[in-house]
Image (tube, rainbow, N blue to C red; front, side, top):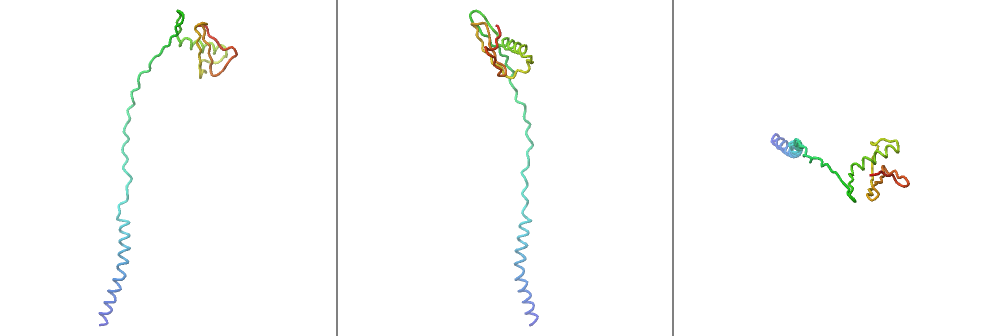
Amino acid sequence: MATRKTAKAATAAAEKTTPVKTEEVKKETAATAAPAKKAPAKRAAAKKTAAAKPAAVKETVYIQFAGAEYNLDDIKANAKKAWAEETGKKESDVKEIQIYVKPEEHAAYYVINGEFVEGGRKVEL
């Protein structure tokens, strides 16, 4: 009977240690068996078609007063030219322009790049 007791003791000892091992194995397998989450597949970027831009609209502004007609584009060009001649700078240096048309005087006053002159700069129309 000594062998039966030793076999029973061995079995009992094995049963006591087996659940601990099974839990550890179960934890390990649960951790390793869970599939790793994959990053969502990136979709190929949809090619954006260039939006059709509307054609540039050519604008022309005319000022009519007392039987006379003045084209604003001509007035602007004349103001830039006069400023370039007066200051010795290039017309391409113009960053900002303000034009004040006074048709009753047949003149336009202008300020370019914020440079104000006493009495104003004037262009005859």
